[in-house]
Length: 132
Image (cartoon, rainbow, N blue to C red; front, side, top):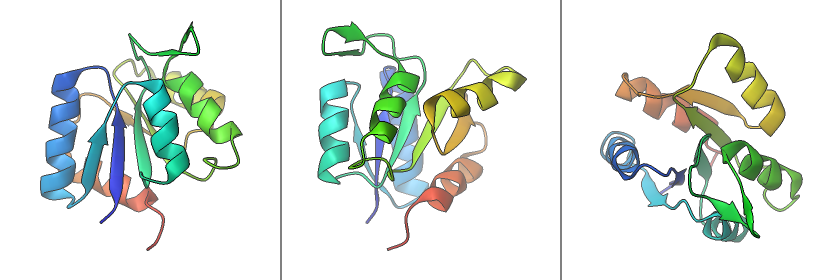
């Protein structure tokens, strides 16, 4: 079973995503907003894909405040985790933002909140999962 790591600082969103992914997508789900934990899960290969909230309010890494863009950059810069697919999730989606976020972060894709179409949400994630 493939595992999705949800990096999200809103527990309600995290719960909603978890439910959709496990019930509809048949995927295992982990959730954390602790950046050390994100890095550790990514490096150990415990997640097959990451759903990364762009605006993490409370996340700190090595004493610095970091957002989803920064964490994605760090993961993409590390050869060990560079191939792990990362989907950015953000509520602040102006038309040009997506391209900027994707370019800046090196993420693989982009989903806007709120997630209205659950089926599409699951399909977007499954489409990026590495083959078995």
